[in-house]
Length: 606
Image 1: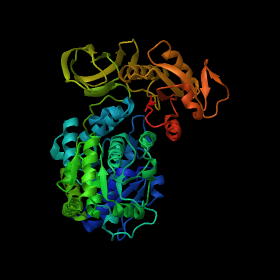
Image 2: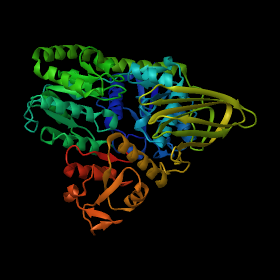
Image 3: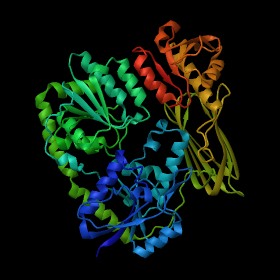
């Protein structure tokens, strides 16, 4: 007898691109291939309904429209009133409520629930996320992990990390790997006239920081310096690191041989794979690593990172290299580009490896997960362990923090009455051993820890015998600056105050002055932020030589030279500082066009 599954596509209107979109698209293909075994009802908001992204040839899935999802300050989304959703579940006789996007199910449903967590990068690489975003993700992801009947993920690596981070039984986590997209199974494309003419390395990835484009660019500079005339082709959406990536290309003088295509359609992407000499995937973190599988399926040699799930996908069909070792990357690329026998061996091994990830295997794993959930039924709701927007929590709360400079971490809070508590603190400097301290007590708690070496990653766990609250969590730097590390309680509240932002900027610039000998910097941007930063830097080891503005209206700014970019050299500065709180990406993109190669570009806020 078929089970009835409601697929919650409330967020499909804005979440059908990138890795998550590819995952959901593949799941819908798998559902379509299961035919009568799974009776599907699509539940979507009006905005998502207009897209019709779930439609598959040969299917006649039921389609229900609910109200547009409303997101809270910490990223939860609901399809209107929870009672109305529960009534819909009863009316349709739903056995499993399946949310393939990373969102929790409504708190109480009269059916089994299946959620999806693709990876926990925010937990394993917390330095890539601002404190508020880490807190939001931690709350949402752990809610999914601890309240769903079953949770789908993409790889054995992700299953292990989810189970470890959120203290859930790994037997409740189902690995449903991606299948190669439909376009990868089409015949090889004829040579595209718009493809690069020289042999090229292809890296299809949004320019997020964890995608690690900069190491690949460094490696390409080494490859070309060795005499190989090879290009680099980049595709994908523009992420937060895009200006930095383009500035890195310019700093190495690689602009003539690096082509940025941005987001491309499937036909163009297929042609770029087919024309590539090698596909490089230097990412520092992946829940799966679809470009590796796409390249294996298309018969392109692969050089991939040893990080996270990438070895699980590549197996022995790729050359694996540490993600941050530019020299090793250059060596591996040269080997594949110059040794045709090696390249042919990788192509043959890739074809065999790709067979393990076929559509039939993905469909079977999806079916098994949904059937298991239906058999297990509703799961008793368990409270998430992370601090919520009201700064209160039950049982356990975890924080991942970053210390930009030496100082002291302070935490204050209480458990009602004489409830017990235990706090575990860990500090891991970039170059040094982890220190760990455990304390316990009852009632109110106040604790401080010294952070002698920075930058450092900090972790704080607070476990209690009941409901508790954290009233203060601050990092007091050695210069007296106090950074509030608790998430804002206001919807849309700023990540940090302007005063805190400027304090971090001064700490960072002074550290650069000590580490790299920078003494004179130029600020890019003649606004209020520059005015405040000039005052903060006065008398320090790193002084402001002048200010650059694209269209200066005067010759002086705060009694300093104010010049256009063309007169950068006249300031005699060692580095350029993007002096804007809200326009850093735009300034970085402009600076990439005129800043001389080798001059450090300092971003203060992203």
